[in-house]
Length: 209
Length: 197
Image 1: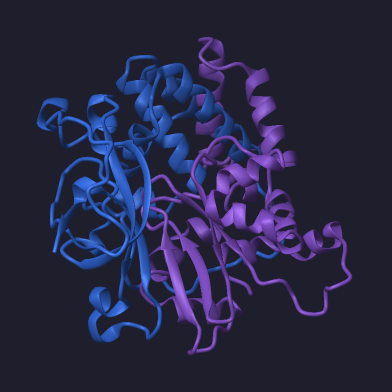
Image 2: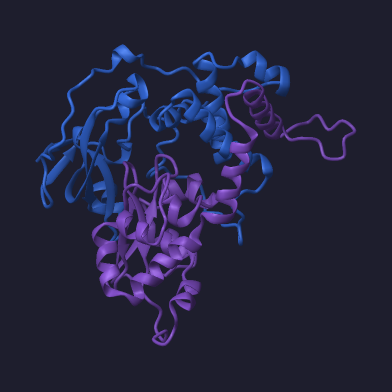
């Protein structure tokens, strides 16, 4: 989905704020939430794309104004409520208002089940273009490279397609690639010199040039 | 943030209340156990962090054959030193040279090589870093105190699939006599992300 989480290239966020000697966890709840999430995702049989999509489905205002671990908290609670393992009422009886993520915009049947591919079609040095697709569900194809041309610099592992894991809980394999984009291909005359960007992309996102 | 301060000296914040509610509800229902939670917290607070990556880098600096293996198959070479686990199945090491500086970002979420670096710092997960690093890396690096000369190519790696990147920094000059442990002590988390040289 073209959501607020897809941040690459957006402007207006200001400087990167670095906290000196930052601890792994700032508060106990962050550490507990990290661990609770791991346990609950395993217990519920939720895969990582489902979890990521639950984060992406957060209200955009909530997403941008809450921390990483609050994203985890919201997403895990959402998945458990959607699966019927807990209820929103049970959470709110303990916590007061408990904001969850919005429902998915696509249903499982909206996502076509394709056959897997385990032999890479592209090789290092091949020119490729990223398909300009705008899927309303979970995808790992960032907006800022769609429609852009790059060159394969690494043939990466053959791994499950995130769209099918997120929406159908199916593991269907697709090759992945490291693709190098010249900065000018992405940012035109606003590009910095001598600063290519490499993005890891699934074969299904790519077409030959 | 909560406006309900009441009379408790340190009222729970709104997010703390929600986090506690979820944890207690899941424990009551037997979905997660407090023992599991304690174990995970301890592992990530104590044992899994950038000191692991520093050992990998130091080994690569003193052992050319190890470095070759690390660059060929990062996860396998890292496993030789006993490190692995979640987010560690496909680690790729990218080497800084006099002509190339590497820097890592995840624009879609906050992917990070946990077994060698631990969990990412807040700035790595923040919208400013994730939005800007792919668009104006040299400017962002300079703001973060990492000046990369214009003649040096900056390679940005956006970890949007299953690979997790570890930057192999250049060995500091004047460290010829240093031991492996001493070298590991010089390697920073920021250098292994690529926001320091």
